[in-house]
Image (cartoon, rainbow, N blue to C red; front, side, top):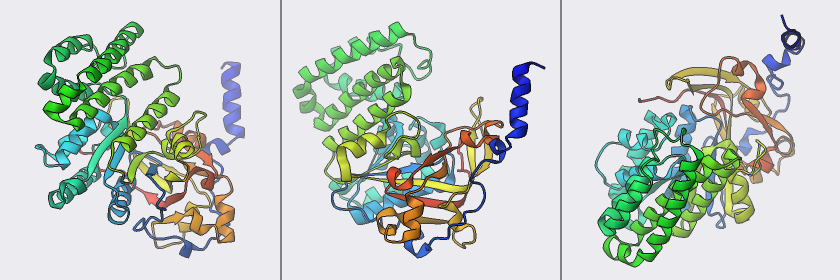
Length: 415
């Protein structure tokens, strides 16, 4: 036995807190639940709010998928929101938007285009089907739209881009189809630096060329087709930039922020709803880099309203190395979710500004709380180490509101 291994074993024996975790005991702070509401039926945002963000503590949970629908439906009904933007592929989400606005295919095919298998769930299918049904009865100017803000795929962005160029400037399409031919979803993680730099330069040239031909493209297909085609090209540029970056997470969030800004500039002025992991949506960083929510909060000030999520007990779909899923369970108690321990309700929504008038809630929201934070996977060893699936925040500094659950369960995977 090596000395290093012996010391590691000794540390695990003498520090059981690594396995049991701090904060798993029920909170001794009892707050007044009437300051909360059962669900986000009405979200108390001001008229200044331009973007509402919903974070999720794990992508593989049924209740967090349902919250996407619940929050969005509330904003549609009460706040004139018509745009849903997910932490998913920009080009792929255009296929979802096409489907909900009367396009052919199925909701299952549509969610498959978003770019992450963790979104291929029955809960997401229900949301997409609801959006399509809503649009069947809505006027074109009031139709709902579904978009993506992530930049980690090539194929669907190239498909939309070249479908526009093929119908308008075919010689430009032929030239850059060849120049960008090596960029595919299948090989995206194995591209060498030289290929990425060459492609980045080529797509930059292409965007300049598109500006030159803008009037021709708009005359044939309209301004919207030009704008989305050029933004697909910009997404390809951004992904090359991301792959070349020394700061992957910070660069990715910067590009997602630029996407949200793009939607604000090209939208109809209504409230935007964005959805992603808590770590992207929060107004303060929990991982040492500037996140999407920080950038939105800095630039929009009170125009950004962020909602976080947490649960006391989490069962979620954890993605395996093989690509399949297994159900993993973790627990974490804090002053927020422990309020539900003896409650008949499984969740509550709390708006922090409203709850600040209560001294107990004010204390909870202004003190450090360790919340669950899970991405797409958690190994067997990691689930024994509390720091691997939690992060510590001051709620009122990170979010404007939270949806807090007692127990959450796995989403229904359809692949």
